[in-house]
Image (cartoon, rainbow, N blue to C red; front, side, top):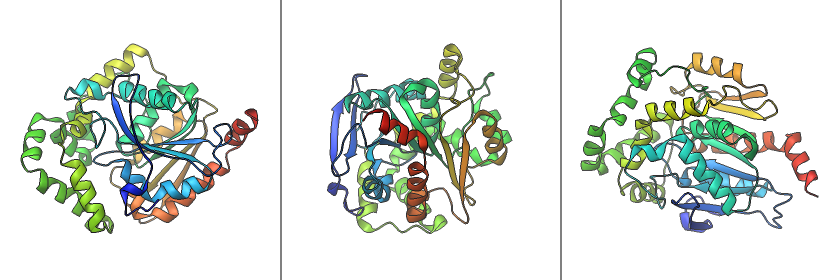
Length: 315
């Protein structure tokens, strides 16, 4: 597994029981035993790919974890429906469960970054029986709203999220797709300059190639605010995570997406809350702090009694 070479990973593609085709990387450790080696399901955010985990997959596999990293709906080699209603967290979580069923994995550790963090947080509510531990990165847990608050109102309270209103508009798809090369260059270049990242020419080329398939799918996630509220209200989702669920939130002190009031509020709904704060780091921790980030999460997982008990129960 060479992070600079996407083809060095084990790629798979499958039609799931939900009717969507997902492309994913599925990497298993040596001597893999489904009864002894936990599965880590990695969920990327916007605008990213399975490739966002390229620096973590190898080390985590060497720690004895099976690592599964899909291109999420709308990205890369995965289905790209045009209707925003297909991108709600209830449907993307159903896809993830279908992926686990395809892999014959009953329970997994869920880890998500950015939009992926929001998705895995909801996975723990929609499918609490399918999750061993939860790691959220850069976007804090937020409980289901009991009252619908339009995105415009949210932005008034958190102006740093103003870009979301533009992404949620139809105008954004038209403008971004008509200037797609410029947008991709801007996003990728901004990652480098703002957070001191270094993308090799090969990495930059891979992202450009994959994102050139169109941005409607990735942008559709921002168009689901009311749809998600309606689904969660109808299902009467709980606010609290499962009491015995091991939970880790990891973020950088220079990450503008971590809104402190939201972070403090999240702790009220998570009994086993733990956090790791990376000083001087920004939003793209998987690359910006790849070694420290990778090892801290591996160490946290190795220290979980629940994972050890899960292994022992299957002996």
